Length: 466
Image (cartoon, rainbow, N blue to C red; front, side):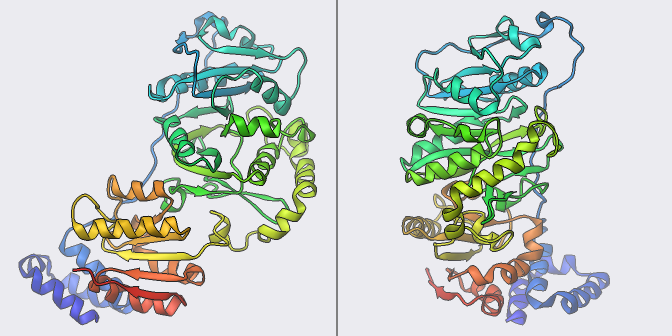
């Protein structure tokens, strides 16, 4: 098999191959063959012949300056939002002091929300004593709801939510800066399906690393910020999926669902675990909670309440985890895994789904050729029947816009430098979860079949489409 693939490359591209040939590369060929095996060697030769390099994908973020020494609120540049009487989205920003963060959060919304979605801004002012109390002097066309006494995060949000006009309530921390085109993907996803009750953003740290690509709740009610501190551009963090919970730092909920639930459960006052709890309650009503990776929000974690779980409001994190476990114990034991087990299923709530692995030379460019269009139709059919789909793209490149289209459908596509070198490791680690493997081309079948047989017990389908 290896010899046939090697000669196929040479015979089809003899001049290119000869130009690349050198004694040093011949030596490296045998060394690589010995260390990595024939399949990886054949792929490497293919890349060499075509001068194809697999890029490392990264996510670029833009941050506004957080710090200044202004002594008067009028020194800030005014921000003017559009007026609206019929917003689709009501953005609630709960605030207790930290005006600089609030100002930059609002500026990022103004700069990055586009003009396709009509929204209103509601500042939920929980008795701030800094410039926040005069925020309307520099931020125009927003609503400010101020509490008479300090209420804490949960009651402050519930109070402000009584004033919303939109179809959707979007809770956004003031210690965030939204990135370009963050709002439209959230709306498009929740509008796509009436069974979706809530959607949330991908959260990024200010250093560019991932804070959370959806959350996982374990049987003991402990939580994982999935992907914490990893590269947010990796494909496992970039497909639409159902999740256990979305952080309240950027969480959009149907107002009709919010009203049915009465908002956040005030038994978790003043804060912590209320976002996990309301996501469980949304599911209890029969709705899904979804992660939208195309909505990117930078979150400066711990600005309001710090990071020390022993002192201040942060201490409620442990206390409220116990409350969460008590309230949802039966659901957690029945539907969730023990801590850190079966992450493959836990990260996208695919425990009760059959998993299909599709392997092809590229993601289907469905408007380019008939075979791609047919494969794309197969993918949509599998989605319709509720399958969990993983796709290995033999080029390991992210093809615009086709890869992103699959990701928005909920298909995880493996691409990038890491997966080019580690697809066999991925199969070894996750092969237990793969029920079916589909191929559409003989050359791809020949490349991957041995590793698939070795690492999975999947039923194998080869559809030879001419």
